[in-house]
Length: 305
Image 1 (spheres, rainbow, N blue to C red):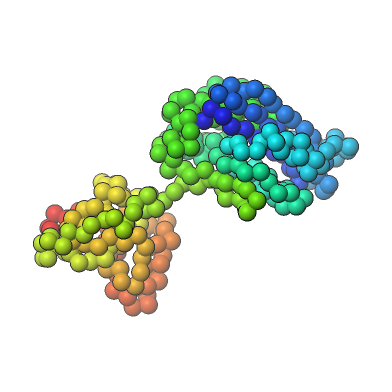
Image 2 (image 1 turned 30 degrees about the horizontal axis):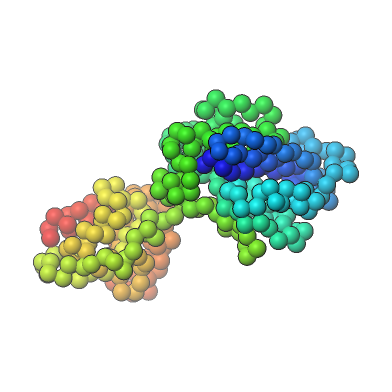
């Protein structure tokens, strides 16, 4: 991304609607062109735990703008921009909750999270917290938990990720990471999310090869997938099923015959089960004849076709 607004908030207490400081950094054509910081009167009590983290005391915000006043001041500047935070589940929802608190109709914005992006793009780091990623990329973080300092570091991190991984727009980000940007507008708020690979497959366009060998163990069977496959992408596996005369399913139904389970050990031994697998187990308990098949057994079924 080369045009965006990085932002960060600190809060007075555990409630996300208690913003007491805000930092916004404006990036245009890959350059930081403006930075804005303000203490905010949250009109709420301060918690000692939060004060210990960011160092802002109740007396510091006396006479400072409320969030409503601050947002009105930057409203036109952020309107229509992609907004980037390092941990969107906090800062994004803090923004949403304060807009709701003051009954403010927000501008239209798309939303990204550098924490989420970093986890998808850089594998194997011991931590993806902001200070850890700043060390990794040699980005200055002079005053961690100061909203402007954190927003500035977030902006620089987004620029480094964009340059290193050639992700200069939302389409490139989606293609590289499967991350769909979040959205905020007058109708509500949706955080950024990693899109399930199944949703990228148009099952309506999958053509089942009915001339396949009817003796194949996959022929005529309704087959769904869940978990991460080791030997195929989900799309490749779906096409293989169709080539063998099987009927790929996006979702599990009472008509499902087999569910092919990736990460078999994680799910069946360690108990890390997907929602789809839990639904299958419930249907099996209710008497439906669905079989749970490991990826290794799926490979054997393919070779026997």
